[in-house]
Image (cartoon, rainbow, N blue to C red; front, side, top):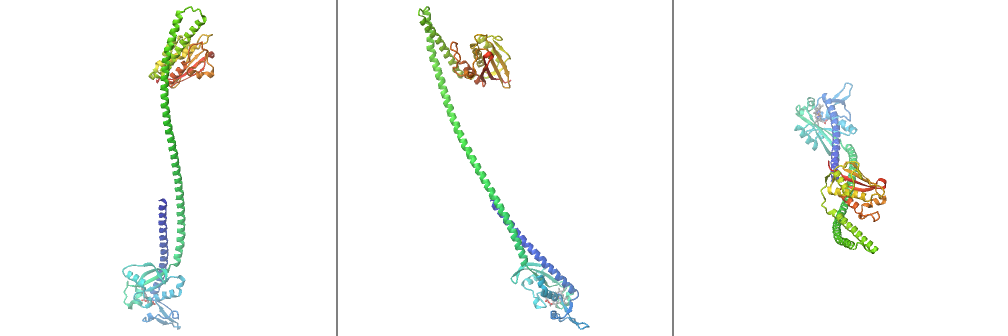
Length: 484
Ligand code: HEC
């Protein structure tokens, strides 16, 4: 489309240029014709002014037979020289006949009613004369003359006073159109120039046109390439998108499976806990009965065994209870997260665990309100403090320091104790289910910190363990602050 517009533009431009060149040629030729005409006219007027001029009568300038009626056509000077009268038309005719080759422009005086038959207007001239009779003042036209292109120019000759001297007898009046001057300029040289200019112009136009076409083609190709690239990237994007969607579907399926497995596992856990609880209770009550019935058992081994059975049953019962509690964490309705007076909850937890506020437990900075569920926060503090109490050092009194640093959205709580501590490699595992690192002579089943981690995570906080005082433990929690 663009190349079509481009081409049309150039065709138009070329056409206009050719027209312009032709107009220039005609203008130049017309100028030349007019110049010649004006010069001839000047001569003619000059001669008319004197009613003609006298020249020596020779072979080249014989007396004009058409002036035969003039009384003084031929005169002889005192010294015997023969002179003859030359009328303007005759003068110019001779000029053109003898020296016409000098300027190559032919000019002559014509009429439809000539004195001299050779001065009869030709077809073109007589059309022009008729036009002058209707008031036209000049006529220019390109026609063929002797098979060659010529620019023909013609202007009327109006009868003036001086003309009547010789033409008066023909019955002309002042102001009549006596005839016309016809000038023809050969166009060959002009046309040669025109052709050359046309070639140059069309050549350069063509070159520019070709260049433009090339540019357009190049631009088009680049556009196409861009288009192709865009298509490719769009396709790639689509593929990626589809893959992503497939991935999402897969993930959803996976999630569904996970939720289901989780539900099944929870259910299994509950069933197991329930079914374990019953035999454990029986085990305990029966071993109790046996212990009461046989208070003084002779057999020492049997006595020990009985005690062992009772202790293990007790442990089992504790274990089952804790599993039940852990499982119930998920089932407790999520609990409203709200502003909780953490300080009060902490003090209550200290009392519940059996420690003393300000003595075994020193709160170094008062706690701000937290964004938490109150029951869960109480449980969390209880677990952490109970853990400290549980793993206290045998040789020194327990000391727990509670530190608190308030940040922008969260606050970091540190429970630093001086208990038996936990070696670095085990600290992360401490929060896993059923992990215990101490000999079994201490009670506890290793679920406390796992529950604590769950509680913290449910409130979108974090928990980890560092080293405490004198090789003890330090539980670090980051918990969300209540919105102020
Ligand atoms: C001295 C006399 C003389 C004067 C002045 C003169 N002419 Fe002529 N003219 C002639 C003669 C004689 C011819 C015809 C023979 C020839 O061509 O020489 C002629 C020819 C012509 C012709 C050509 C047609 C034809 O009849 O052969 C025209 C047109 C013409 N004259 C116009 C004029 C005009 C217009 C003037 C005034 C500006 C003028 N002449 C002044 C003598 C004269």
